[in-house]
Image (cartoon, rainbow, N blue to C red; front, side, top):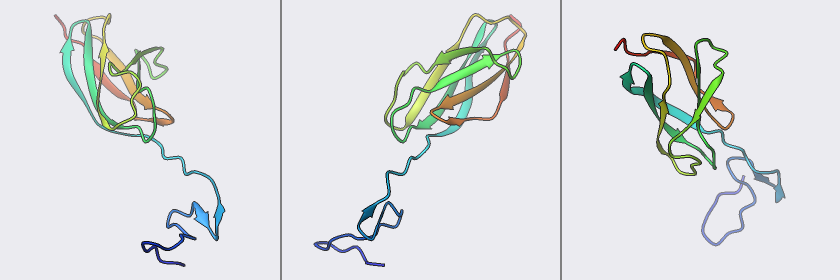
Length: 121
């Protein structure tokens, strides 16, 4: 394998995109979702924040509902993103004292199901 040095032609790259001067295609990197937290709970909704590294351009979406079939969605307040950072989802119009399931999707990446109960008053 050739070593990469300044001024030399690169024949091989560690990721394997170029091997023996043949382009094998781009490597698609999936978004990363981390640090999911519920930051505000009221009787008719809640706010969820998460750190998303889109590794491209994505619109993060929170799916929520009474079951893991979800049924409702809300886009991140930030809309489409192309740089890593914190995104916010504000879920409103819910029933008080009720447990909701939710998960976050960004591109093909999704979090595991989580639950949040709305406040009683």
